[in-house]
Image 1 (spheres, rainbow, N blue to C red):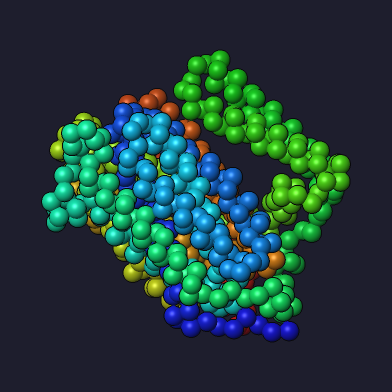
Image 2 (image 1 turned 30 degrees about the vertical axis):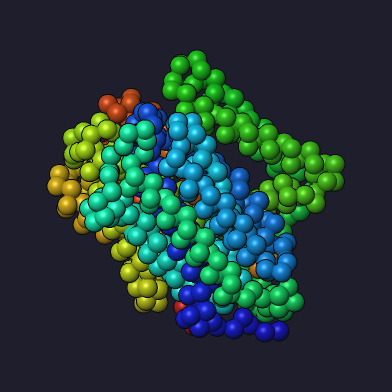
Length: 509
């Protein structure tokens, strides 16, 4: 029996460096895709629907990639083949996005881009669990947060830099719909994405299957198995049928209510999603009844129902956290340009000035997250990972709520510092807590399933935020940010109830 060796600072640096490229892609997407959609004729109150491609893709792709990366071993190792394949596809999609000739093409390209980023990103989370001992995992995820912040700050401000420093046009030119500042930002992003991931692929060696097996023999590696029910698919067959029936009935009833009352069509997303999930549960039950249990669907659903208690508790925290983030990513451009700059005319210089400033704001919170990422492990050592996360989320909630009262765009930098603290913690603390509760041989699968609780709130936000804005707030995007700030406060409250079973401070006592 042996314990995983501690890695040096530069080894953790190299294994995390690919996140610089991943976040370059995400930051360009988050800061500019709503702008591209609006420029191509998309309505503000439909932006959430256009964005649905991103969370739906993650919901499907991440558990599949996690499941199969657990079982993969080739010349490049266990996780690195997925890093490389996703990076190649993501870079291509980044080149195509700003050249979309129509709205539907841009929405389709977002689907491809997000799927490709997820192929790369999901194994990176499991990578930390694979490579680092428990006492270094907080530092490992903090390093990922640093590269996420660094990549995002540069990518977010690129359009502003091209406009103010390099003199590229910030408005559409003859024969082109997307401004050159945005196009060149995406071109650079595609190159950085690929090169950063290649650095990790080349500079990091994964443990062999034999080494991983020897680490799994260590008592600490099996600590999590005492915290999860080892029910087989056959034992869970009644649960598959019960849950399938429940979700199917609720989904059909909700869809009927939306149809009967002629509510907005995006609300069909909720009903349709519940119905599809119910059908998948029935399919899982059917395959199980036929003793066809050795397939990805049955294994993933079985593992999902066997989630450790800590993972279930963190799911609530993630739900409220990512609802807030998705609201911010979708509506900040529309909120700032309309509530503060006073325009919704996407062809105007004033709108594009405001949209560029949103890129600077996004760069601000990401940059501050990169700095604060290294301080969070220190705070966690002095208090706990739970309290560090709760405090950080409160700062983020205050930041988003501040957008409603601040009228000077320059002053928006201050609340974005609070958002940066929350973002750094969201990217590290839940994963540091989670990995200690997971079995080593299913690290990728459970990281993919954990993504459900990132994606589901995003789908919910996409389904209801536009509806709520039209029904109650006269289409004013600023209220989406208010909802996001309130959601972060709920996330902070729910952290208190999480049981950090692998807390290093507890194990030292």
